[in-house]
Amino acid sequence: MSAQRLTVATWNVNGLRARVERVGTWLDAFAPDVVLLQETKCNPEQVPAELFAPRGYTWCAQGAGGRNGVLIASRVGLEPSDDRLVSAAAPASEVDLLTEPRFISATCAGLRVASIYAPHGREVDSPYWHEKLRWYAALRDWSATRLTAADPLIIGGDFNVAPTDDDVWDPAVLAGGTHVSEQERAAFAALTGLGLADAAVALATPEEKAPYTWWDYRNGAFHRGWGMRIDQILVDPRAGRLVASSVDREGRKGASPSDHAALQATIERSAATA
Image (cartoon, rainbow, N blue to C red; front, side):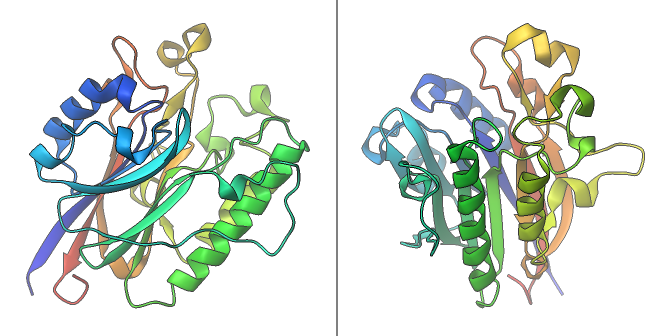
């Protein structure tokens, strides 16, 4: 039975227009089949035209000017979806984060793919933190529904949660903050508990934990190794067999980088799953 490999990559670019040259260089170097971008900070009509079409990608995006924004680009076909995250619970504050452009999905090569940019949460127990948990519950509900559909599901993006203490440079220093609270980790675990595999963890060796994807701009955090693993690719086992996962740590270097590094995962799809 023949098999086909497909690579999905996710990257919080922290401003697509500001880093268009970096993104183009990255696309040329790695050529992922499906690209998930977050924090694009632009409306769809502001996405640089030279980035995707000349490289064989079609794309769809959600945006709201200079904040948030998510995008999917594919060179294996793309059918946009009008799905959105919804919740029966009332917003936790005057700001309804479910209305912000933090979620987009499309069908690519027979897979339902979502690019997500989870809320930061600001401070534990703040209204924005409670709204983050509400947003996560809505993402879980959507995912549970999608997992009953015929097309396998892949969710990638900036989840703004470090799932375990292994995913942060110093648990003691970060204790009590967002990204590592018990409630946020439980919300992430509820999502993977649906049966989605965290690609980087699934492929990490016993000797090496899954690599960090984010380093603060301040205090020389990148060079000191003060990182966190808050970007993930979650894969429905029906999509195929996970065969590779890597972080482009080199892309975090140089002038004006994003504070995130790109993460990619490769699956092997048999004729039965493709």
